[in-house]
Length: 93
Length: 345
Image (tube, each protein chain N blue to C red):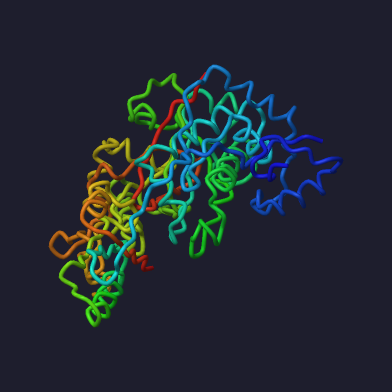
């Protein structure tokens, strides 16, 4: 018996690879991005404080989504891509 | 040899229905209830009903794959639909793919939301969709299977597997199915799809990522003003996502309540205005910690009151159900929309 696969779909993503440059976590600018749920910011603040023991933290910044239930707006994503070499996302819940 | 997930058509050899259900469960294709077998021949009958509707289907998040009409129809077959239901199912999928509906967020959230599907227009009668007594409940094949087909598509195509991508804390029985028809015949105002700019002769699917229906019981009030006091008091729930997520909600008025409100001069718009004004939640009913959460994400109180949505337009109103003094309030996920799509054909 032949059946149709109910999960079949064509991938919408291309095979194109994005070239990633290595990140120097000891010196590079880092974005700490909150999903805007309670305690996400506190979690990221703790990480920033701990990083401060081993590196300069003037170039480690906090960013967030407008709403916990909505995707990150394009301008936030573009800002991260343009200004930071690394990003840490806190998904609090 | 391709992996099963990469094959549109799969030869499963000789299997009876029971063996197919075991196989489907192993693949993660089911919702826990028995499935019909999506044979090539049966799927072809469904696909035939949407020939001519050539609008492309966008990638379906979170999995980001573009389904084929065959794979969509396989879910409708498994759900127990008749072929003639498939244009409604297809329209429902298009509707949840409205970017404002926020399908990814609504499927991945810890909230209990599920797609609420409402059907308007002549197709309700053609397909025998229940719009009257027990319209949210059991007993009608179209209601039960159209909603179930959408749920299976979100499981199998979108990839919303419970406990994996679907992170709902408790879930909701509406994740099995939640589909009903507007009771246009007993609506003393304008049918919902006409409120949204469609012609009365159009058949339209409306979707919202919502909770189950919250009952609005009022046997005592004999005036529209009294009914709105009960409705608003019941809608003012601090635990609703819409209080801090600020999004839409449905108020589905039973025909008897609708007649009373109409008799007392209320319109859809004036009901909306009154409900928004009267359903505000006093800060004494919301913990200080939760108030801090609301305000830290930009949802400020109006004086000592939090509103249940952004503005009166967040309250979407129509009529459904049969005899009795009950209506229903259906709050949404918050970060979502009430999206409408005309059913092709």
